[in-house]
Every structure is written in structure tokens, then in C-alpha cells.
Image (cartoon, rainbow, N blue to C red; front, side, top):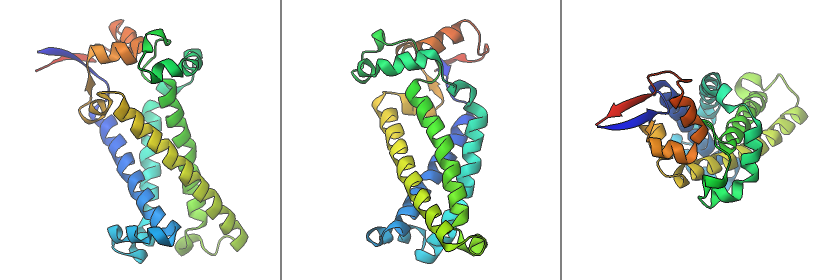
Length: 216
């Protein structure tokens, strides 16, 4: 038996993976409509017509799913003074030398920036998507407004893809981070190295007594 720390509950993980799957589907379907060179991606959805039809509905699910993440995690992603100091120590963090970086709570500054960036970009994508959703809202706005919305939608999509790439890269780069979101737990050693302040809070009982348990 070994001691492990529950980092994400089953609900946390299901919500996260629904969001992730919806985002990937949105990217693939959106890219297929963005440029003729990427139209071949529409084959994943049954062709161009099906892609155009399903894309906005996936966006609706993505928005609702991300709202679930906001409800669950907004408190843990509030910015603190320690986060600014962590950003200033980003070179040490990038070099895997976190001993000299400020102790980090449950989420570091990078994770918080990803969280709030998506909290801004996903609603922008949703609202601009409504404007250019011709089946239901095509007659509600003028052509110039739709063109402006399409431009903003495209820019927000590119930014969201960049944020997503950074998020995935960081998750893979920090060893055992993916396990936390697939199996829900981390080891005390992992927490000490990457989120020491969070481990102190757990040890002091601030996050409940059922966080740490034994695992075969």
C-alpha cells in the first residue's frame, strides 16, 4: 500500500475530458471550413454539410462543459501575489529547477492563465458563432456584422488553439500530470515538487480529511 493524494474527483475528470473532446472536435471541424486545403477533415464528420451542421452544436456543448469547469475551479484559479513571483521564476521552472521558485498552490500561474484565457475565448467563440450561424440567425444580422464576427471568431479560434497546445505540452512535459487527469491521483513527492503550498494545505487539513488515502 502507498499513500496517494486525490487531485481530481471523477466529476472533475469527466467534465475535463468532455471539454477536451468537444474542443478537439471543434478544431477539426472548424479547420475543415476555414480553408479549402483542410476540407479533407470534413470526412471525419460525414462530409461538408454534416460538418457545417454539427460544428455549432458541438460549440454549445463545449460552452456548457467549460461553464462546469468554471463552477468547479474558479476559486483555485484566482490570481495571487505568489503567482506573479512564480512567473518571474519561469526560467527555473522551465529548467526543472523549482526549488528556487515560490511554493505553488493547487494551480500554478501558467495553469491559471490557461484557465482564464479559455474562460474568455470560449464565450467569444460562442457569441461570434451565433452571429454567423446562418440556419438560425442568418437574417438577424447584416452582412458586415457577420463578416466582422467571422474575423473575430477566426482570431479567437487561433488563440484558443495556441493556448490548448501550450496546455497539452505542459501536461506532457511535467511528468505524471496526465495521470492526475486520467486516474485522479498524484504522489506526495509529485505534490512536493510541483505544488508544495497545496501539499502544505492538505497536510493542515484545509481541504478535508479524505484527500489523502491508501492505494495498492
